[in-house]
Amino acid sequence: MAAMGEDRQGAGEAPRFAIDYRALESIDPLLGKRHRHTVDVLIWTMLAGRQMEAWLSETLAARQLDTSSYFALSALWLAGPPHRMTTGELARRIVQTSGGATKTTQRLVGMGLVRRVADPDDGRRSLLELTHEGLSVARETLDVALEAFDAEIGALDEAEREGLAAAVQRLVVQLSERLSR
Image (tube, rainbow, N blue to C red; front, side):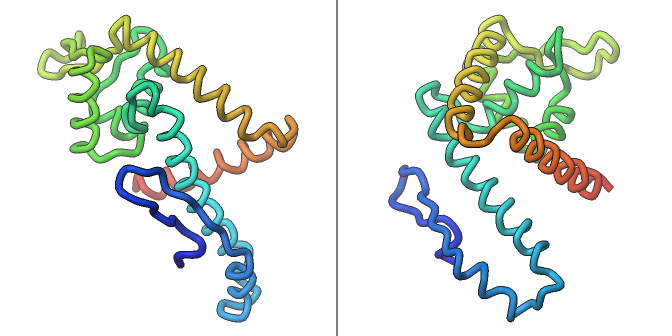
C-alpha cells in the first residue's frame, strides 16, 4: 500500500511517509470488526518502526553512525561495566542476525569504538568491549538521540509517555518470547 508506506525520493535520500487514514477505515468491510484493533496495532507499529528507523538514521547521520552501530554501542553501554558481551549476545539484544552483528562489530572495531578481548571465563571465546572512545560516543549519541526524540514527542505528557512505553514494552516482550522459541 504505497499510500501507507514509504515513498522513496531518490537514492541516498531519507524516506518520506504518507499515511492515508481513509485506507485504514476501508479495512473494516474487508476484515470485519473482529480484527479492527489488531489491524490498527499491526499497521501503526509497522509504520512507527519504519519511521523511527528513518528518524534515527537522520539524527545519527552527523555522527557518522548507522542505526545498527548505534544500537550495538547502546547495548554495550547499557550492559554496564565492563561494557562487554559476546557477538551472539549482542545480536540477540539488537535483533540482528549473527552475520549482521559480525559486520556491525567489524565496522565498530575499525572505527576504534569496540575491541575484542579474551573471555576470562572461556579462553575459546572473545568478547566485544567498548573502548574509552566507544564509551564516550555511546553516551554522547544516546544524549543527542534522547534530546532530539524528546523534542519530537513533546506533545505527549508524562502519563502518555509512560502508557506508550508500557504498551510498546509489552509488545516487544511478547514478540521476543515468540521469536525465541
